[in-house]
Length: 325
Image (cartoon, helix red, strand yellow):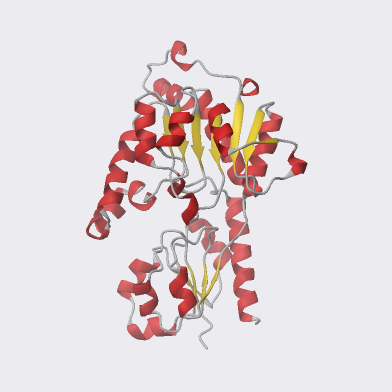
């Protein structure tokens, strides 16, 4: 048995916590690393710990014939071919919950930036073109927040909304009575919210849960926030809704095909392998990012030193539990 554990996409902030003779650290994705290691080395690999930019496809699994465990340092597993892993009896472990407070706080940061025009004001100050007339905002305690999904992160958002004095509408298949919020249908939430924030996992049945029909039902003064999964939102329909003034604007920390959206070098290196649909989405996302009422950030809602330490701890626990079986 090989005692080595292979970590991919390791950042500088993680390295001090992964100082161990049995750990092999790479700062790149598994897809790039496999191009540069021998067949003999690949056959030794039994445990890997990737992050969200490593695509664990059938082809990757074919290169790792003795792989037994994938301990991804993420909640989502849509970068891993789960069905193929099940066929090969490869265990997949994730980090089911971490940084709920972290993401909830970031969500409210985006809400404040949108409702108070903070980003635009900062840009204008830097260019010495500030004009207070352009930054008229809204008081949050006068607005209704629609929370789609009241899991740990959605619950954290509701608690912050209470502190700001907001009216809260929520939609979830499993209601939490202790939150003391008003659960309504998704349609009612969409029609009556001033700000809608998404906090549901991505599953096939909620692909593009927000598309043209939903945007047509929103108030034309409403904002959409997504710190959950890019696949929940049809970015083409969202772009149209914004430029046609059917909604006020949006803040997105996640976008479908986000790997190519957030890094031009990655896009250029992988353009031959990238679907036409993803290329179209990258183009629309870039156009949308240039709009004054849009904020797009590169999937960093989870990104605090505290949350990263929690991710590593849970990942190590997952590996220990597997080895102790």
